[in-house]
Length: 399
Ligand code: LMR
Image 1 (spheres, rainbow, N blue to C red):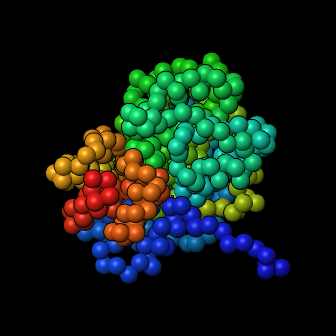
Image 2 (cartoon, protein in one colour):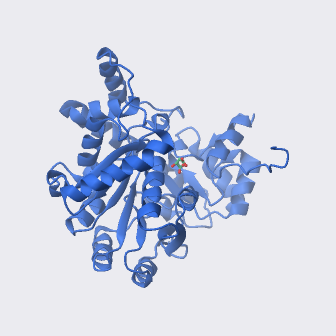
Image 3 (cartoon, rainbow, N blue to C red):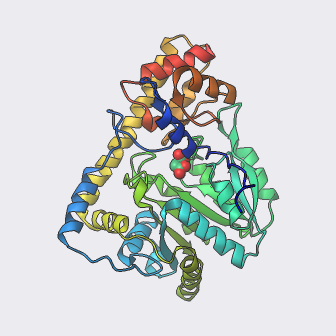
């Protein structure tokens, strides 16, 4: 029955990890998937996570199923992490929240909820470009995926005029996916003034701001600052939908830990939304795993551990910023003909280099450096030992 089945293409991001693992060249460098590495190039486990693991182990908890909505303590803490401890929406019990399989799972559950209650084929607008997986997630959920202008290759920055024009032209009540901070893949974010203007434009049109927040604390090193846009939209009265991931900021990639929340008009509406979220989740994967939720809950519920986590997260953000400066100065030191200013201007895990697909493929073939075909480099994979080699390899192709 499967004899005519065609071979599927490798995933544009995760497929690179497979190709990298097969490569035998000792000089190879992996800058594809966004996963943080220490300066030794090795996967990094946060000290606070190690401490939380110990606490969880000592509690000798059982392995019963979580509820469909996950570990309640985790979800509660996750929401106050994003919306703020004093958030009136949380105090008024008008936020429906569930634990999800990281940010991807949150996006998919939201996509299914939209398809059910806005109607299959409803439009969802994604920034152009966006994280590659957003497109199939929402297509598979049955939504009509459209794009809004976001990145301007000429300025290597935000096309704010284009963005505003596309929001203005979109139907009332359309759904807009917004990257809360550290836009993936470009590393280009709106300023606070621009976020405020966007919020003001969307509010009378009753458009739904759907934030994907995968880097809170990781973008600037300050989790409060990174949540600014989300909180502003809630303050402005939007019924925000929010996907959260704890993969990068807590280094819990493989634990698949995240949350989806929906800000509602009142507690009764929130209860109804929560009930529908459970109906989406139950036939999809029944209920989420508990381990990562327990770890995040231990850290966020403990004052001392939270303070230590903030410092650790900032250290990761700082190392990435240091690598940005180093990559840029190496390229400038080689007297590159191109401007590399954007390397230090963009924020978050990625640098959107502006390299063409042809250049990317050439660097991969010649130097065994793996990054996505759109020219996105995971800065988290750059270390003091490989930065010079990466700069030289880019220079060899671009001049
Ligand atoms: C990335 O963009 O590299 C990460 O978000 C990992 C992934 O799942 O694609």
